[in-house]
Image 1 (cartoon, rainbow, N blue to C red):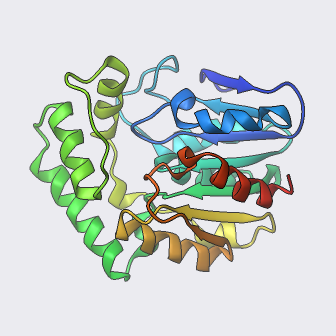
Image 2 (cartoon, rainbow, N blue to C red):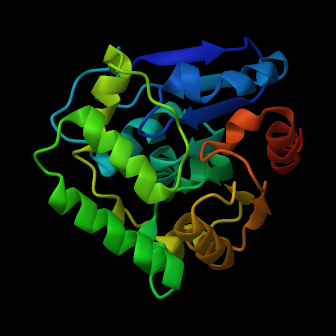
Length: 245
């Protein structure tokens, strides 16, 4: 059994496992989805390295995917945002018989966008940024990372402990390497949804490639933040449509 700390919202209804990204946590990433707890049971784990889950020296999407696969129980809907989207897709590939639907929000699965110009440019930019900033302090690193992504996210100074911890975790990731097995997922029959907000062209390329490879519905909410689920009801309505809710 996984030793992750987990947020649980809702007491009845079908379960939804929600996987947060790199600069957030279970509680903050899915605050706007708590509204669904009147008809679903929401299970939102804190990935390793994000308190109160156990610490880690390195973020490992495969280990995270194994943790998430355990949380699916006898079956659940699955939602992942940012790096949590990569984790969710890898978890779905590990336990496809336990996934009822799969929704991913701007996953940095850059190898899956290989050959598409914006995805290739972003992969190179991120790889170079990591190489050039290996000795940076976490606050400087995360600010520059957001500039590479063209993400406007004001950062407090100094970074509060949870965000400082998240920045240190981010520095151990390798987003230009975090692809997923489209072939394995394409063989599954559960509904799939790929969502973006339009702010990072490289992520748009990745999402287009994933939607094509997975025969997934592709939805763009122009002008939305990278964490598109935070726009609330408009996202929730589209998400529910894939759940039959």
